[in-house]
Image 1 (cartoon, rainbow, N blue to C red):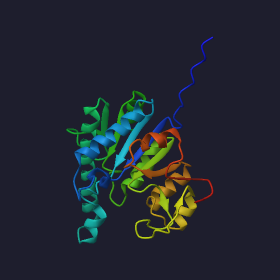
Image 2 (image 1 turned 180 degrees about the horizontal axis):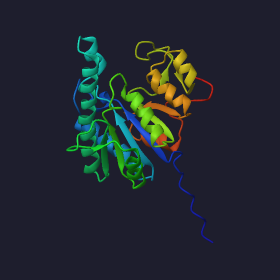
Image 3 (image 1 turned 180 degrees about the vertical axis):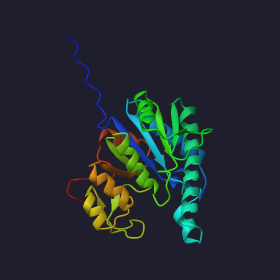
Image 4 (image 1 turned 90 degrees about the horizontal axis):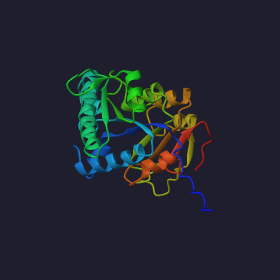
Length: 250
């Protein structure tokens, strides 16, 4: 009798929200969008979609304009934040183009209505897109000033009932100190929500962390620049730092 085929490992998470920083799109540049980096991110996400995982994304706008930075230089904070939201729409359109070039159906839903380029954010419609295997990009943050794209990511993850929030960065996890400045800094394998808040670790802003804590949504912080890392995170491999209810340990 022929031996039975070993079953392929199944993803740990069925539905994810992937949070990207605007800076992640710059590649090696100082600002703007790198086509090479876009293509790499799109391929990593496609690999996950091909596993049958439902993928939603949010993205910052720091590669184009950062609201807080504008406010600190004398601009009205609300106006600066709205400008930052518009920057996220530009990034979302760039990502959508990269996804669709490799055959990944994508929809942008914007918290600020602009019918010519994006659907308005409608929670039930977003979930329906996900169920049909489309990638959904949530643009323009929450649509409100004084709320970061981290908070938008946490909020949208809760609304679509995501299993995990994947925070993709340029660092391979959360450290006790800046590893670039302090070689002695150690990486946390796991962190509790409370410790993130108490130690003021710059994982996400405090509003985003509190939202995740109140709803027990796990956060995985990992390095986006490593090819295949999104897939590894989705498969549940030990990668980066996991923030949740558990005890913190290095």
